[in-house]
Every structure is written in C-alpha cells, then in structure tokens.
Picture 1 (cartoon, rainbow, N blue to C red):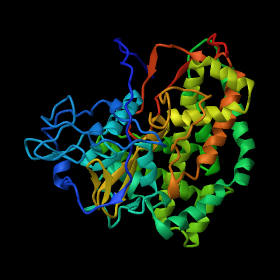
Picture 2 (tube, helix red, strand yellow; picture 1 turned 90 degrees about the horizontal axis):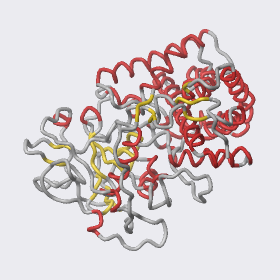
Picture 3 (spheres, rainbow, N blue to C red; picture 1 turned 120 degrees about the vertical axis):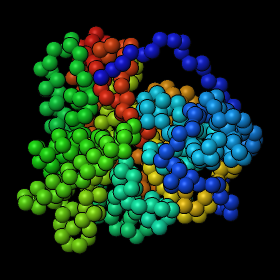
Picture 4 (spheres, rainbow, N blue to C red; picture 1 turned 180 degrees about the vertical axis):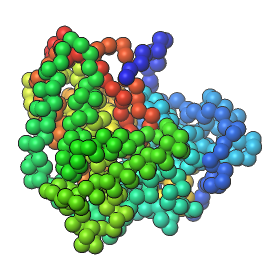
Length: 506
C-alpha cells in the first residue's frame, strides 16, 4: 500500500511576506459563469498552476492593509507557469481559452502532499479562486482561514442548492449525490435544518457519549489482542488492522448494522469520498450507498433494536422524517462517523511513530493525548474541501474576487490549520504549540455533530495502542503511503508498521 519517495532535492524553503485580508461585503457586480453545456468537455485547456504560495501571509491581529498587488495574478498566455488573464477574463473568475470555452484550474484529486500544496497555491491566488471540479462543475474555492470562517456563517451562502444553483437537477452529476442531492441536515438551512439537527443532536450529548465509552474500550481491547497475536517483527497494515476497525465497528454497532451488511456498506461509504474516478464509477457509488442504506432500513424494520437506525425509523413512522431524509441522514451519519475518524487515527499514528520524543511526552503524561488529537486534526484534517455552498446574493471578497448570486462555493475547512498566517511553522507536528485551532469539524450552524464522538474514539484508541506497543515503528521509513484520490478526504490507502520495530519512545 506504499510507494517509494521519488529521488530528487527537497523543495526549497518558503519565505513569508506580510499582508492583510479584507472583509466581505455585498456588491452588485458579477463574474461570468461557465455554461452547463461547455463545462463537461474541455479540450483545449493546458495545465494551470498558481503563483508561489509565499506571496500570502496574514496575521489575525494587527495586520497592515493588504496591498492590491501582493496577490495580483499575472497576465499573459495560458500555460504551465502561472494562472493568467486571457481575453480580459481574470483567473480569479474563469479563463477563456482560444476556443472560447470557459475553464478554471482543476481542483486536484491526487491527494496526499498535493492536497496540501494546492491549498497554498489557492490561498496565495486570492480570497476565492474559481476551480473546476469533476464533470465540469465550477465553484469558488476558499482556502484562507479567516475567509472560510466568515463564509461558513455568511447569511448569503446556503447549503441547499434548490432554487439557488442555476440549472440544478438532482442526480445529474453523480458524485454530488452525498454532498448536494441528499436531503439531510447537511444540505438544509433554516427551520428544516433545525428540525433535522434537533432530532439527531441529543444522541451525541455528553451523557450518551460517556455511556458509549465502555463499548469503545472493549472494541479497542479486542483489536489489540488480535494485534498481539501477530509476529511483532513482521510488517502489518495498521490502518487496516486498527485505524479502520475502531470507528467502523463503533459506528456499525451504534447504528445496528448487521454483520453481513457491513463490508458492502463500508466499501461504498469509502468510495463516496473519492473524487478521482469516472462518472460511471461515481454513479455506481451512488447506487451502492442507496442500496446499503435501504438494506439497513429493511433489516431494522424487520428486527428493531436499541440502536440509532431503529430510533430514526420511529421518527420516520411518526412522519418526522421522509424516506429521502431517512436514507440521507443514515448516509451522512455513517459516512462522516467512520471515514473521517479512520483518517484521524492513521495520521496520528504516522506522526507519533516518526516523532518519538512527542510520543514519549504523551505516554508520560496522559493529558497530552488531547494535544495529540487536536494537533493531528490541525495538521491533517480528515476533510479538506467540503462541497458545496451556494450564493443567494453577490458577495465581494475584495482583490477582484466576486462571488455572484447562484455561484457554487467549496470551503476549504481543512486549510485553516495549515495557514501560515494563523500558525507559525504550520506544516510541523508539534504538541507544544500554543495555538492548535482548526476547522476540521466545520464552523457555525453546520458544525459536525459527531465531533465529540470522533475525539472520544481517538482519546481511547491512541493511548491504548501505544501503551501496548510503545516500540511501534514504520516498516519502511522511506516509503510514502499511497493517498486516497480525493480533494475531499485526506486519507491514505495503508500504513505499514512493525509492532516491535526497535523504536524507543523518547
């Protein structure tokens, strides 16, 4: 599940320049939008890249006024060097190729380090930058931490595409099923959002979560016993054997998923986060997710129990949930509650086995495990770009970036934790940093309800794992884990370790 790091010199050290962000204000101007018919097929587009990320650095307080030229995009030919302005259209909006087709730079689905490097490129290019998503969808990418925070609570941005996004037809773009087409609290606003969130919220309250702790501990202990039976000197995939198993078993138990349904459901929930496939694979994933949820609903109708799915079915039968809302809510909760926590755990493990002094500090002082969790969420957010929001009125972000009414917006919630304007040494893992703030679980009314559960699982699983195997080490320190192909999910295909790799914590 790993590939060798390619040879070559290390990337040059970055320098930082100062600047300042501008507030968000309504406006009357509008940038051109790509016609639906022209987005899906772009033949004459060359690779586009952004200016050096070092042109942007913004401090939260005492920031000098931003000079307009500090993040100006150069004009010239559309090529591989920089984003350009062609035929009078700035690349902060859309680029016109010689054929007249409107295009935008693609948001990369390569994952891994490319996911992080593109955050810097986008951040340096402006407060919002037009990007192309799969199947020709064009949206504004927002990756500056302060702007993400502002837009996450902006009254002119909505998670509900209905009646806002021009020509929107549910099902027309398969990969958008989970993110736009479903009818859950994640894709609703106002009273509808409050109704759905109120129905789910109490389940994730502090008392209910503490009642879950013994079952989480039992799950972790069972997995550790299985690992202890392995040859500690032989490589094994700790993601597959532990990081994946903890949250998926916890959530499947929580929702009462029958054992024989779990492999099928988890397969398609994982695929829903991938954005590097074909439209055909996205359609198969959509159908697979729907099939998995319908099978679960049928099983719990036939044999209800003391689980979350049975509770939601009670609400459905009482006309509190429609059938679409029931399926969408199960998809949201199961997907968010499994895949994101997998990524949190595997990234934390990777950082600790490569930072032995910080592992030693956590083992010596149990209070430091909370620091491990928050620093991992800051540096390696499980979700980086979250699709989609939609502008109900024009929004002027300054620097020539205008989000017009009807435009789609993709917020980079994972970007704030790695923003050098907010965090010194933003790309370093450091338990001792004073400010570990991040937006890994979102911000505002749509803040993730499952965040306390994810933190609890990590707080139980990580100390138990390293207390049992304090000498765990990477099986190959030169290997680079293969990333998931996604601009949404920040995960890896596997992480090979030796449980007794000779590493000493300290």
